[in-house]
Amino acid sequence: MIRRIDRTGRWVDGEPDLAAVDDLVAGAVRSPRTRRSWLVAAALAGLGVLALALAVFGVFWWYVGIWGVDTPVYWGIAITSFVWWVGIAHAGTLISAILLLAEQPWRRSINRFAEAMTLFAIACAGMYPLLHLGRPELFYWLLPYPNTYGYWPQFLSPLVWDFFAIATYGTVSLMFWYVGLVPDLATMRDRSTGLRARVYGLFALGWRGSARHWERHQTAYLLLAGLATTLVVSVHTIVSFDFAVAQLPGWHTTVFPPYFVAGAIFSGFAMVLTLLIPVRAWLGLQSFVTARHLDYCARLMLTAGLVVAYGYAAELFFGWYSGDPHERELVASHLHGRSAPLFWLIVGLNVVLPQSLWWRGARRSTAWLFGLSIAVNLGMWLERWLIVISSLEHGLLPTTGGDYWPTFWDWLTLVGTLGFFAFFMLLFLRFVPAIALYELRELVADRPRRGA
Amino acid sequence: MSGLRGLLAEFVGAGDVLAATRAARRAGYVALDVFSPYPVAGVAEALAFRSRLSRVTFVAGLLGGAAMFLFQGWVHAIDWQLDIGGRRPFAAPAFIVPTFEVTILAAALATVFAMFIRNGLPRLHHPLFSVPAFERASRDRFFLFIGADDPKFAAPAVRTFLASLAPLEVHDVPR
Image (cartoon, rainbow over all chains, first blue to last red; front, side, top):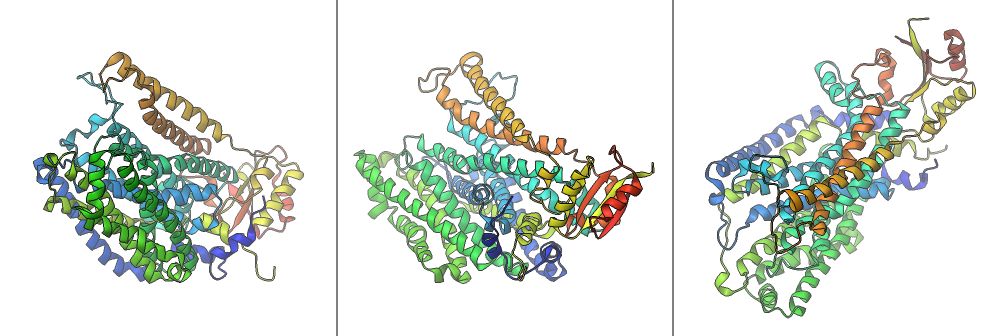
């Protein structure tokens, strides 16, 4: 099989050989250089995990009454954050699945990292609806299992669809990540000694790099990529059904599925950049995650951002064009009413600022990209606030409106999931190679040798 | 002779091991395997090996999806009829979403499990691991293995043959 050598060569700076690749990437795992800073970061993130434990304890003990949710705003920032976290997950799946099928060599340096982000973001997302159930300890009632009450889940409900979508997404993402990880765990096993080698060896399942094993592994990986590709577009579509199927102004619109998917990829790439920019410097991986990689992420972010901008425009237009007085009131509220400050802030963060990415200088400035990615993360969280909370506050009639503000417990849950996410990302960076080693080896081995 | 599982030739480059594999096939050896730190393009073809995993994926997806669709129909049309907005009990369009999700889930689970089972993994210990140099199969070295179960296997002849392929070294793999 002939690979496109001239296209693969550009994605690694310098001329490392196979051993140098291993030493740089596998050496960054448990590197003594980052030990102290890792401990500090992990301790801070650990505080976040404690905050989450407290927040979860609160909900189990006193139930959702401790959150700010009340008639008519039944869904508070728990659902805002749920949608936000699921959205973030999508970029990882897009990088690892769609870019694999599209034979984009640059994904090889960032797919492992982005998949880990996906996995932990789904874990954070999945907590919210379960905690929001009212009786979170009975979450398993969502599963279709034979029981003495003789009931089943109500399969016509988007909330049940959502459960299936998130459960499938989480499981497939975990398998995808692990299947890719097995050969690299074997590398870690062979580089380590003693107990550490045994632990890595256990998780490497005895991988030995046989050509037949590789063939099946690569076939399985490709098949999983094909399956996961359908999830990139379906999961947030199904999340959007939670809203679009309801009659509420601001929710009941057909543009929601594509608009949610674009928003998911948009915010996901923002999170990839937020994490990748500091981590590549921290672990010293700039020769594999180059400025060009960030540039390409920024381009995809801009593309998704344009679809999001179209979504905003379509939502406003169809709100007006529907002729429905309630929809028109909501549009007026967004443009120059009660929700206008929030709406225009979101437009500034998600539509205006990302237009800077048309310029190469902006895409190549890590400082600008980092700042912008945080702005977009914030903007997308606020956008979900606008969709979830402002729509519920507005309601169908002035008499059915209401106000919502999150309580201490709401914020604690959000801070807690951020800490949880950071903590598991840190564990990931400390114990497994942050870049898929075998994919990187292929990339390096395919490079044209100078003078060869 | 009986203490030998096979012989292992160590190479520096992917191209070398690919050429050696083809030479071994031409020489009539069949109990061959290649070990490499990344999937080397062309080696599977040289070993005349093809993965048939995609059939597993297809069948599992089909079965999973069909089972979920019929299950939902059974739940709402037969076992537990509910009037949901006046929709008919067998509300096929609404069943599509869980059907789709379970199709993907079943296909993915079956693919991964079939891949590991067909590869004979997990198998935490293997005679190859007792060759010290084999550690670098997960790093930067490429190995061609000729098993003692090959009908043409005779240790001295195979050792000479492997040495003729210009490897870095030829290792004995004990049983």
